[in-house]
Amino acid sequence: MDTQFDTTSPRIITSPLDPWWDAPAFRGNLTKLVTSDAPTGEKITALARFLQLTGQTSHTDQWERLLQIAAIDTGVARMLEPHVDALGILAEAGHEAPDPHSAWGVYAADLPTHRVTATADGAQTVLIGEKAWCSLATELSHAIVIASDSDGNRACAVNLRDPRVRPQTSAWPSLGLKEIPSGSVAFDRAPATSVGPPNWYLDRPSFAWGGIRVAACWFGGALGMARSAAQVHLRRTGPSPMGEMQLGQLDAEVFAVRTILSQAATAADGDHKFSRAEAWRLALRVRNTVYRSVQRIQLLSKELAGPAALTGDAAFAKADADLTVYLSQHHGPRDEAALGEDISSESGTSGL
Image (cartoon, rainbow, N blue to C red; front, side, top):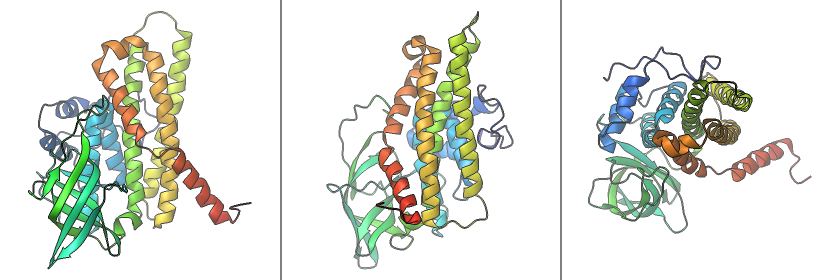
């Protein structure tokens, strides 16, 4: 199955005028992998091979393929996205591609109560402390952990199966993304490998492109709901003016997100060398716009599909719950305020 993904199939991002309400032809084989009962780590690596996702894959292809997964199961896209992020980070820092059977996460949350420090133990870098919000720590083989050091912060690659890495077991009662427990991990002088120089992880322009990659996953989850709702409507008999209106509203929102992601992908993969500040400003624009549109697509999809979809269609109900939790991780108004402050600062009108 690894060679059956058709990279020439019609796309959502780069072909925004193509119909969105029908699933692409390759979806059958992809769905088998997404819905398989394989262990999480094996599922992640199998999907990466099937979709030909490596540390060198273009941003356009990353976003396109992840949103297609999210349209089937948002939770699985949430599993795979950090793995793709980690592969890109390692490649950008000049490291060799990791074992193709290794499954990676990226743990970057920084809470005052949960801090990890990178320090030298002879020639070896070791991690000490506890990191919060470490998704799938018991299921993955490796992770890139953002730790503090004397120069600021440092990205470190660590083997999660080392005995000095101890995921903390706690309840995960979430109904959305319930298959992705995200507890804390304690590091007791766990050996690690530095990835890039100090502060490099946050300072690189591609950090911003990763933020848009997450937004593409949000959109994929909403697109899956919109497709299901549209198919429910198109199978109805008799006129439904309200349904036609909601379908038209959905079409406009989907087109808007496709268009903005297309423009962003062209920028991310283009020849222009963005500074980190330029890239992050673009990412804030894209993420905030996609976030608002995805919320509306989610609402319209539920209205168009009706209560029967939420109570009788397990996949639709799961998509709604998963997307709600995934969207809650967005910084929302804080990012919108950051964008406004950035523009005011550049224009010299801040405080006027």
